[in-house]
Length: 467
Ligand code: NAD
Ligand code: UGA
Image 1: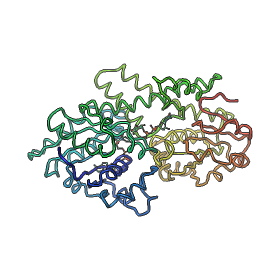
Image 2: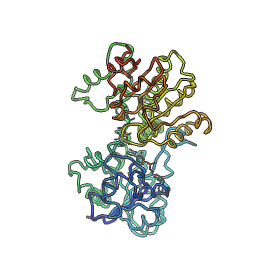
Image 3: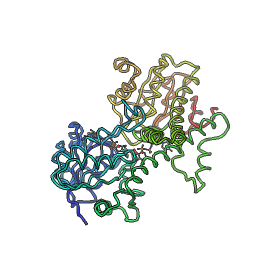
Image 4: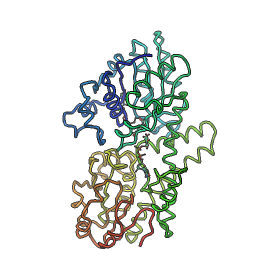
């Protein structure tokens, strides 16, 4: 079996950085290079100040300080990284297409293709190319084709090794993965490549949890896993709407339903709607694929998960307006949380963006406090929606560094992200500083709403009937 001595990873993002850090930690004999076209990102990964790392994940900075510049290296020279490695991970972004055929649905594979072309142009020895990015089923055949065209007698094996980590728990998920999935070609060279990669993971993942499949099953399993997870959230969110107009309590329903061992308790937490860079993009991609293959009923089925999620975000914002006497014009509203979930600085597709946008549309004065997301990121998120000009957004979105300052003279506070610290706040103090009636909208169901009501707040909670 081929023993890998050097790995390179193209793409130093939320997946590339943490994944390679853990591979380097568990394989001190392997040199791991991580490269990116964005020089600023490389600078941040190399920063002495660990607060500056481009990705915030519990446990990440400790690993980085242990392995960086020992066997983990971040740099910008992609050609050098390709030449040096026997195995190359492609871990670049695969966003939803914003142009041309498949606009708004299909995955944009231009960054992946660029990587494949660069590998084909630069390589001077055989390589195992690993798809780490989430890709539509059958992408490996395009990558293989591009690599083959270089025609210099080099051998390239292509593997699919999708990543299942969730942000906020990335290090834990990587260290204790439920499974590692490796898809490869059913041939002698394909099997050798699979073995070489399995061997790297076997440094810390028990062999029985390293699952090998054909390459197409691996690619499709990733999209399917995300679709199933998101489907559970949309299902419980649909029920949350029904709970709010009956006497049912969504947490109680989720508990009762989740205790059925066939259903299980995870991913049944009602919320303002799921966010993150992948659920929406991957389901849209799945819908696109189904339509592409003429499976319109299957496409419609999965699309409903997204429609439900959009409804949940809008419903939350509109409920705020309705509760506040049908007008929020000129009222100060504070959003607690901008990240799409706790313990990450990532805000891609966060419900916060859409809720802020809707409230601004209603002429509310929106202030935001988040422990990890920077103002520039929030502003850019709003700008990317293209609903108003950059200057307008700058004037309308107010950034807060202190939650108590943020709440002063506010008419309402809305919990958008489930950051633990929100539960520990002095809500009495917050109440005193707010305009009356003081509203709390808990989009994450994390606060003790009965205690808040006793303080005097008007409280609305996702999936609970208002008092
Ligand atoms: P990201 O945007 O954080 O990182 C991607 C990086 O790739 C960026 O830094 C970008 O500059 C770089 N890049 C793009 N083109 C490049 C090129 N040609 N050469 C060098 N660098 C290039 O994205 P991410 O969140 O890390 O996601 C990467 C992939 O992993 C996506 O396909 C995503 O669906 C998948 N994924 C993400 C997660 C997650 O939690 N974020 C989890 C599992 C899978
Ligand atoms: C998700 C998957 O969980 C990962 O397995 C996958 O690798 C990743 O997508 C990916 O492909 O990018 P992630 O989006 O990082 O991970 O985070 P999740 O924990 O799945 O949360 C996604 C969204 O759903 C968040 O907004 C979260 O608040 C929301 N959520 C989650 C709920 O509203 N309710 C729940 O019960 C669980």
